[in-house]
Image 1 (cartoon, one colour):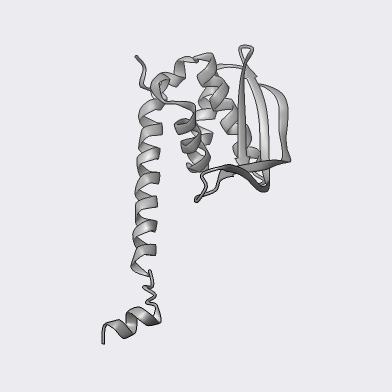
Image 2 (cartoon, one colour; image 1 turned 90 degrees about the vertical axis):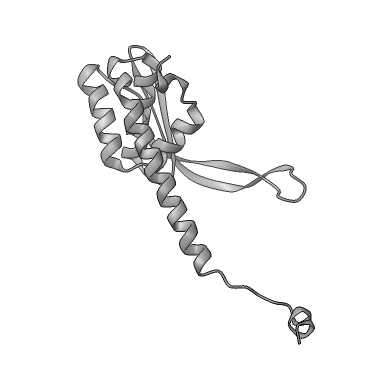
Length: 151
């Protein structure tokens, strides 16, 4: 089975939302070169309620509204959507084109798996580096009781 087909939407979305714009332009450009892209809903901003989970009770709740940019396109009558946090119309459009190309099974999609996985590895490495930097500057706060107990 094709590795790109095995990549679930959540993982793919995480890669596309966080990767650099050059990669999005490259992949969406390949799809645009192969097929006519029809814009179903031009990139537009809207507000959505952000759902999260309480860390103590583990109950879901709505944290508040978040500004997003969303776009919908179609390729071969197959839809693709792009939704990103913030005002990023080009990123939303590019993600929608890539999503539509994947959903339509365009031939270029077969070559995308190694590129997307490499981007995911770069992002994971950057995240680990940021975590290491933050951990290095972590402050250890002792309570007065702990301080006096050590004397």
